[in-house]
Length: 333
Figure (cartoon, rainbow, N blue to C red):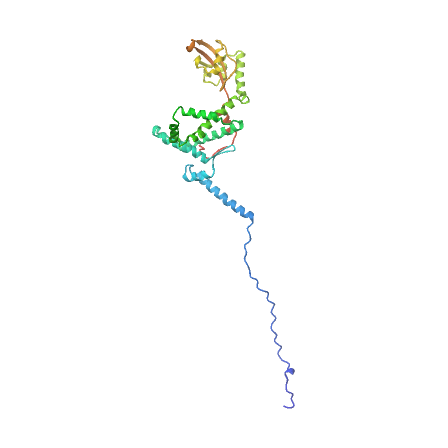
Protein backbone atom coordinates (compact mmCIF):
# COMPACT_ATOMS: atom_id res chain seq x y z
CA UNK A 1 0.00 0.00 0.00
CA UNK A 2 2.92 2.17 -0.59
CA UNK A 3 1.23 3.49 -3.68
CA UNK A 4 -1.63 4.68 -1.59
CA UNK A 5 -1.51 7.79 0.43
CA UNK A 6 -2.27 7.41 4.01
CA UNK A 7 -5.50 9.21 4.75
CA UNK A 8 -5.09 12.12 6.95
CA UNK A 9 -7.65 13.51 9.15
CA UNK A 10 -7.61 16.77 7.30
CA UNK A 11 -8.54 15.04 4.02
CA UNK A 12 -11.48 13.18 5.37
CA UNK A 13 -14.86 14.65 4.36
CA UNK A 14 -17.55 13.19 6.45
CA UNK A 15 -20.44 11.58 4.66
CA UNK A 16 -22.84 12.55 7.43
CA UNK A 17 -23.67 16.12 8.00
CA UNK A 18 -22.10 17.57 11.03
CA UNK A 19 -24.34 17.37 14.03
CA UNK A 20 -25.06 20.76 15.40
CA UNK A 21 -26.67 21.18 18.83
CA UNK A 22 -30.18 22.47 18.42
CA UNK A 23 -30.59 26.15 19.06
CA UNK A 24 -32.53 26.85 22.26
CA UNK A 25 -34.15 30.14 22.94
CA UNK A 26 -32.59 32.27 25.61
CA UNK A 27 -34.32 31.59 28.94
CA UNK A 28 -35.87 34.58 30.68
CA UNK A 29 -35.26 34.77 34.37
CA UNK A 30 -38.01 33.22 36.43
CA UNK A 31 -40.12 35.88 38.18
CA UNK A 32 -41.75 34.96 41.45
CA UNK A 33 -45.43 35.79 41.57
CA UNK A 34 -46.15 37.76 44.74
CA UNK A 35 -49.81 38.12 45.95
CA UNK A 36 -50.42 41.51 47.51
CA UNK A 37 -53.65 42.99 49.10
CA UNK A 38 -54.98 46.07 47.49
CA UNK A 39 -55.81 48.76 50.06
CA UNK A 40 -59.55 49.16 50.74
CA UNK A 41 -60.73 52.64 49.77
CA UNK A 42 -61.53 54.92 52.68
CA UNK A 43 -65.07 55.47 51.45
CA UNK A 44 -65.67 51.72 51.50
CA UNK A 45 -64.47 51.50 55.08
CA UNK A 46 -66.75 54.34 56.09
CA UNK A 47 -69.70 52.73 54.30
CA UNK A 48 -69.03 49.39 55.98
CA UNK A 49 -68.77 51.00 59.39
CA UNK A 50 -71.96 52.95 58.78
CA UNK A 51 -73.78 49.79 57.74
CA UNK A 52 -72.69 48.02 60.90
CA UNK A 53 -73.73 51.02 63.01
CA UNK A 54 -77.13 51.21 61.33
CA UNK A 55 -77.69 47.49 61.81
CA UNK A 56 -76.76 47.84 65.47
CA UNK A 57 -79.07 50.80 66.00
CA UNK A 58 -81.94 49.05 64.23
CA UNK A 59 -81.40 45.94 66.30
CA UNK A 60 -81.32 47.78 69.61
CA UNK A 61 -84.25 50.00 68.62
CA UNK A 62 -86.32 46.97 67.68
CA UNK A 63 -85.56 45.40 71.03
CA UNK A 64 -86.49 48.57 72.94
CA UNK A 65 -89.79 49.14 71.17
CA UNK A 66 -90.85 45.50 70.92
CA UNK A 67 -90.49 44.96 74.66
CA UNK A 68 -92.35 46.64 77.53
CA UNK A 69 -90.59 49.83 78.64
CA UNK A 70 -90.37 48.32 82.12
CA UNK A 71 -88.27 45.41 80.84
CA UNK A 72 -84.98 45.23 82.75
CA UNK A 73 -82.80 45.27 79.64
CA UNK A 74 -84.80 48.14 78.16
CA UNK A 75 -84.20 50.08 81.36
CA UNK A 76 -80.46 49.52 81.09
CA UNK A 77 -80.36 50.59 77.43
CA UNK A 78 -82.56 53.66 77.83
CA UNK A 79 -80.66 54.83 80.89
CA UNK A 80 -77.67 55.30 78.56
CA UNK A 81 -79.24 56.01 75.16
CA UNK A 82 -82.02 58.66 75.05
CA UNK A 83 -84.54 56.67 73.02
CA UNK A 84 -87.69 58.76 72.46
CA UNK A 85 -90.96 57.74 74.04
CA UNK A 86 -92.66 60.60 72.20
CA UNK A 87 -91.81 63.54 69.97
CA UNK A 88 -93.76 66.77 70.40
CA UNK A 89 -92.89 69.25 67.70
CA UNK A 90 -89.11 69.50 67.98
CA UNK A 91 -89.01 68.31 71.60
CA UNK A 92 -88.21 64.75 72.64
CA UNK A 93 -89.64 62.93 75.65
CA UNK A 94 -87.28 60.07 76.44
CA UNK A 95 -88.14 56.57 77.56
CA UNK A 96 -86.09 57.26 80.67
CA UNK A 97 -88.35 60.21 81.52
CA UNK A 98 -91.36 57.98 81.00
CA UNK A 99 -89.92 55.34 83.33
CA UNK A 100 -89.36 57.88 86.09
CA UNK A 101 -93.04 58.80 85.96
CA UNK A 102 -94.00 55.15 85.72
CA UNK A 103 -91.93 54.16 88.75
CA UNK A 104 -93.54 56.93 90.82
CA UNK A 105 -97.00 55.80 89.74
CA UNK A 106 -96.19 52.17 90.49
CA UNK A 107 -95.02 53.15 93.96
CA UNK A 108 -98.27 55.05 94.48
CA UNK A 109 -100.39 52.13 93.32
CA UNK A 110 -98.44 49.77 95.54
CA UNK A 111 -98.98 51.96 98.58
CA UNK A 112 -102.65 52.67 97.85
CA UNK A 113 -103.71 49.24 96.56
CA UNK A 114 -104.17 47.99 100.10
CA UNK A 115 -106.86 50.60 100.61
CA UNK A 116 -108.56 50.82 97.21
CA UNK A 117 -107.65 47.44 95.75
CA UNK A 118 -107.95 48.84 92.21
CA UNK A 119 -105.17 49.50 89.73
CA UNK A 120 -105.65 50.81 86.17
CA UNK A 121 -104.78 48.57 83.24
CA UNK A 122 -101.34 48.65 81.64
CA UNK A 123 -102.78 50.44 78.60
CA UNK A 124 -104.47 53.08 80.76
CA UNK A 125 -101.29 53.67 82.77
CA UNK A 126 -99.14 54.14 79.67
CA UNK A 127 -101.66 56.42 77.98
CA UNK A 128 -102.15 58.58 81.08
CA UNK A 129 -98.43 58.99 81.69
CA UNK A 130 -97.77 59.91 78.07
CA UNK A 131 -100.65 62.39 78.03
CA UNK A 132 -99.18 64.06 81.12
CA UNK A 133 -95.67 64.21 79.65
CA UNK A 134 -96.92 65.53 76.30
CA UNK A 135 -98.95 68.22 78.06
CA UNK A 136 -95.93 69.19 80.18
CA UNK A 137 -93.75 69.38 77.06
CA UNK A 138 -96.28 71.65 75.34
CA UNK A 139 -96.48 73.95 78.37
CA UNK A 140 -92.70 74.22 78.52
CA UNK A 141 -92.49 75.12 74.83
CA UNK A 142 -95.35 77.64 74.98
CA UNK A 143 -93.89 79.24 78.12
CA UNK A 144 -90.55 79.61 76.38
CA UNK A 145 -92.16 81.20 73.34
CA UNK A 146 -94.18 83.56 75.56
CA UNK A 147 -91.11 84.55 77.57
CA UNK A 148 -92.52 83.12 80.80
CA UNK A 149 -89.86 82.07 83.31
CA UNK A 150 -90.48 80.20 86.52
CA UNK A 151 -91.12 82.37 89.59
CA UNK A 152 -88.96 80.76 92.27
CA UNK A 153 -90.58 82.55 95.26
CA UNK A 154 -93.90 81.29 93.98
CA UNK A 155 -92.48 77.77 93.79
CA UNK A 156 -91.47 78.06 97.44
CA UNK A 157 -94.91 79.35 98.38
CA UNK A 158 -96.68 76.55 96.52
CA UNK A 159 -94.43 73.96 98.18
CA UNK A 160 -95.33 75.36 101.59
CA UNK A 161 -98.97 75.20 100.61
CA UNK A 162 -98.52 71.55 99.66
CA UNK A 163 -97.01 70.89 103.07
CA UNK A 164 -100.21 72.19 104.60
CA UNK A 165 -98.55 72.73 107.96
CA UNK A 166 -97.32 69.13 108.16
CA UNK A 167 -93.97 68.30 109.68
CA UNK A 168 -91.39 68.56 106.86
CA UNK A 169 -89.75 65.25 107.76
CA UNK A 170 -93.08 63.45 107.92
CA UNK A 171 -93.99 64.94 104.55
CA UNK A 172 -90.65 63.79 103.11
CA UNK A 173 -91.19 60.28 104.46
CA UNK A 174 -94.67 60.21 102.96
CA UNK A 175 -93.35 61.27 99.55
CA UNK A 176 -90.75 58.52 99.70
CA UNK A 177 -93.23 55.82 100.66
CA UNK A 178 -95.93 56.89 98.20
CA UNK A 179 -93.90 57.88 95.13
CA UNK A 180 -90.27 57.06 95.86
CA UNK A 181 -89.44 60.77 95.59
CA UNK A 182 -87.26 63.04 97.63
CA UNK A 183 -88.61 66.51 98.40
CA UNK A 184 -86.34 67.96 95.68
CA UNK A 185 -87.78 65.52 93.14
CA UNK A 186 -91.29 66.50 94.24
CA UNK A 187 -90.46 70.16 93.68
CA UNK A 188 -88.96 69.47 90.23
CA UNK A 189 -91.54 66.97 88.99
CA UNK A 190 -94.73 68.44 90.46
CA UNK A 191 -94.42 71.88 92.03
CA UNK A 192 -92.38 73.63 89.36
CA UNK A 193 -94.48 72.34 86.39
CA UNK A 194 -97.70 73.35 88.18
CA UNK A 195 -96.40 76.83 88.94
CA UNK A 196 -95.15 77.30 85.37
CA UNK A 197 -98.55 76.23 84.02
CA UNK A 198 -100.28 78.69 86.35
CA UNK A 199 -98.00 81.52 85.23
CA UNK A 200 -98.57 80.68 81.56
CA UNK A 201 -102.32 80.51 82.11
CA UNK A 202 -102.26 83.97 83.67
CA UNK A 203 -100.19 85.28 80.78
CA UNK A 204 -102.71 83.92 78.29
CA UNK A 205 -105.63 85.31 80.30
CA UNK A 206 -104.13 88.80 80.25
CA UNK A 207 -103.10 88.75 76.59
CA UNK A 208 -105.32 91.30 74.86
CA UNK A 209 -104.67 89.95 71.38
CA UNK A 210 -105.41 86.36 72.37
CA UNK A 211 -108.57 87.30 74.28
CA UNK A 212 -109.94 89.84 71.82
CA UNK A 213 -112.22 87.39 69.93
CA UNK A 214 -113.91 86.36 73.21
CA UNK A 215 -114.25 90.00 74.27
CA UNK A 216 -115.95 90.72 70.96
CA UNK A 217 -118.42 87.87 71.58
CA UNK A 218 -119.37 89.42 74.91
CA UNK A 219 -119.63 92.86 73.33
CA UNK A 220 -121.93 91.48 70.62
CA UNK A 221 -124.19 90.13 73.37
CA UNK A 222 -124.23 93.54 75.09
CA UNK A 223 -125.06 95.27 71.79
CA UNK A 224 -128.06 92.99 71.40
CA UNK A 225 -129.25 93.94 74.89
CA UNK A 226 -128.75 97.60 74.07
CA UNK A 227 -131.00 97.16 71.04
CA UNK A 228 -133.76 95.89 73.29
CA UNK A 229 -133.46 92.12 73.04
CA UNK A 230 -134.54 90.07 76.05
CA UNK A 231 -131.71 89.24 78.46
CA UNK A 232 -132.84 85.62 78.81
CA UNK A 233 -132.88 85.13 75.03
CA UNK A 234 -129.40 86.62 74.58
CA UNK A 235 -128.04 84.59 77.48
CA UNK A 236 -129.48 81.42 75.98
CA UNK A 237 -127.72 82.16 72.68
CA UNK A 238 -124.35 83.38 73.87
CA UNK A 239 -123.58 82.41 77.47
CA UNK A 240 -121.27 79.46 78.14
CA UNK A 241 -122.46 79.13 81.73
CA UNK A 242 -124.74 76.23 82.66
CA UNK A 243 -127.39 78.82 83.53
CA UNK A 244 -127.82 79.59 79.82
CA UNK A 245 -130.57 76.96 79.60
CA UNK A 246 -132.59 78.98 82.13
CA UNK A 247 -131.93 82.34 80.48
CA UNK A 248 -128.87 83.09 82.59
CA UNK A 249 -130.77 82.87 85.91
CA UNK A 250 -128.45 81.74 88.72
CA UNK A 251 -130.94 82.38 91.49
CA UNK A 252 -130.25 84.12 94.78
CA UNK A 253 -126.64 84.53 95.81
CA UNK A 254 -125.36 85.75 99.17
CA UNK A 255 -123.78 89.15 98.70
CA UNK A 256 -120.86 88.13 100.90
CA UNK A 257 -120.18 85.14 98.63
CA UNK A 258 -119.82 87.20 95.47
CA UNK A 259 -116.15 87.28 94.30
CA UNK A 260 -114.48 90.61 94.97
CA UNK A 261 -113.78 91.18 91.27
CA UNK A 262 -117.55 91.31 90.64
CA UNK A 263 -118.92 92.66 93.92
CA UNK A 264 -118.45 96.35 93.05
CA UNK A 265 -120.22 96.08 89.71
CA UNK A 266 -123.12 94.03 91.06
CA UNK A 267 -123.48 96.26 94.12
CA UNK A 268 -123.93 99.31 91.93
CA UNK A 269 -126.78 97.88 89.83
CA UNK A 270 -130.39 98.61 90.55
CA UNK A 271 -133.10 95.99 90.19
CA UNK A 272 -133.73 95.30 86.53
CA UNK A 273 -130.47 96.92 85.38
CA UNK A 274 -127.64 95.15 83.60
CA UNK A 275 -123.94 95.91 83.47
CA UNK A 276 -121.58 96.51 80.61
CA UNK A 277 -119.00 93.90 79.61
CA UNK A 278 -116.87 93.21 82.69
CA UNK A 279 -113.51 91.50 82.29
CA UNK A 280 -112.57 89.04 85.01
CA UNK A 281 -109.76 86.57 85.55
CA UNK A 282 -111.50 83.77 83.68
CA UNK A 283 -114.37 85.30 81.71
CA UNK A 284 -116.09 88.34 80.24
CA UNK A 285 -119.34 88.86 82.14
CA UNK A 286 -122.60 90.78 81.88
CA UNK A 287 -124.75 90.88 85.03
CA UNK A 288 -128.41 91.69 85.53
CA UNK A 289 -129.86 92.17 88.99
CA UNK A 290 -133.36 90.69 89.19
CA UNK A 291 -134.06 91.21 92.89
CA UNK A 292 -132.48 91.98 96.26
CA UNK A 293 -133.45 90.73 99.69
CA UNK A 294 -132.22 90.84 103.27
CA UNK A 295 -129.52 92.97 104.78
CA UNK A 296 -126.13 92.65 106.42
CA UNK A 297 -124.76 89.09 106.36
CA UNK A 298 -128.17 87.86 105.17
CA UNK A 299 -128.26 90.14 102.12
CA UNK A 300 -128.87 88.30 98.87
CA UNK A 301 -129.17 89.28 95.25
CA UNK A 302 -131.02 87.44 92.49
CA UNK A 303 -128.80 87.43 89.41
CA UNK A 304 -128.90 86.59 85.74
CA UNK A 305 -125.60 86.42 83.88
CA UNK A 306 -124.06 86.14 80.46
CA UNK A 307 -120.64 84.53 80.62
CA UNK A 308 -118.12 84.27 77.80
CA UNK A 309 -115.06 82.37 79.06
CA UNK A 310 -111.58 83.52 78.18
CA UNK A 311 -109.20 81.46 76.09
CA UNK A 312 -107.70 79.03 78.59
CA UNK A 313 -104.35 77.35 78.99
CA UNK A 314 -105.91 74.02 78.04
CA UNK A 315 -107.30 75.44 74.81
CA UNK A 316 -103.92 76.97 73.96
CA UNK A 317 -102.09 73.71 74.67
CA UNK A 318 -104.55 71.72 72.58
CA UNK A 319 -104.26 74.18 69.70
CA UNK A 320 -100.48 73.86 69.87
CA UNK A 321 -100.65 70.05 69.87
CA UNK A 322 -103.15 70.02 66.99
CA UNK A 323 -100.78 72.11 64.89
CA UNK A 324 -97.65 70.18 65.85
CA UNK A 325 -96.24 66.79 64.99
CA UNK A 326 -96.93 64.50 67.93
CA UNK A 327 -95.57 60.97 67.75
CA UNK A 328 -96.27 58.69 70.70
CA UNK A 329 -94.05 55.62 70.57
CA UNK A 330 -95.37 54.46 73.95
CA UNK A 331 -98.93 54.69 75.22
CA UNK A 332 -100.53 55.20 71.80
CA UNK A 333 -103.89 53.75 72.90
